[in-house]
Image (tube, rainbow, N blue to C red; front, side, top):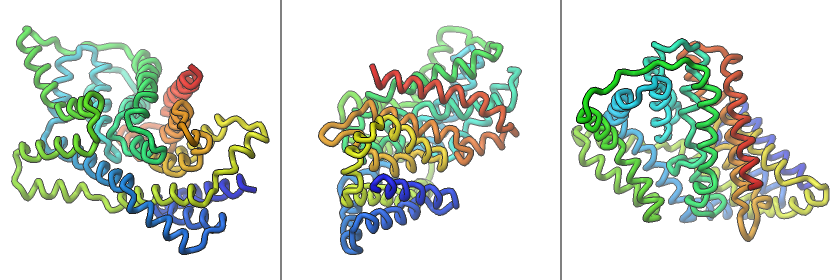
Length: 402
């Protein structure tokens, strides 16, 4: 009976999202039904929601996502991304590799529909290569999404750490091999079948060093984030705030333009979504909805691997949004992940399963936009995408048992 209640909640939220009800609203409706089904009255549900909203964890999450959005907008306004691409085309002779570097770099800065930023760059690099629209769609889309497993700026990763109450660095440490698996999949299924063409050679050591220095200088915010987080273990809010202040001061535009960048970085829709995720998590825990499930599944002989795959994958493919499958499935999977100590290997597998669904989802914004840009056909895209996704999933299974 308990499992049927949870299945009802998951299906309800999935149907609401499929009917294009706002994700935040879908989660709020799911939260109310969750509380009601498990005997919580209106006052208890409201109290649980208020606790979730004012929790320091929630406030830190909202500010981190706001700063990430702002960083992306400043990077675009400063022209740093454009200089990065120009420099790389001079530094890398293999046109196949140079072609996929722009989406890989832009993938370091989370932005809805961000694959559209690199689509023209991939198209330009592909002019001397004999590749189809479907190949260009795959390459732009796949290499744009290499880093979502481990890059600390991605809201999905931040939400997962917040829901599980584990350090962000702990998640990154266990999940970064998946990024290497994704790169390998992209090389095997995307780059190797393409005949190579060489870019122009840089003449003179000085020109090479100048171009290299220009590239390194352009990505200084990325270096600072890595150094601050990994080496000094500084809070992400302090790192992002420091970088943004420096970038805003050095940005050569008037103060009105700078103010517009800050204002446009405030997304009330995203704030409400994040609040909904944290409220849903609190009500799941306060309702004791998941306490009896491990015992029931153990008695029925169901392996934790099955729900850890099925629930995130289903939500990922239905929504095409990382925050959705993490925000909905991870609170429900907490008993499987562990109560006293989180099983990060199982978390990694669940994350990979959910993201596999996201990558295959026909409602994924990046996939839709890239497909339309190149005029590609679904069949040809999935012919390349399916083996790549399966490759990473198999890698996550192997890593889980190592």
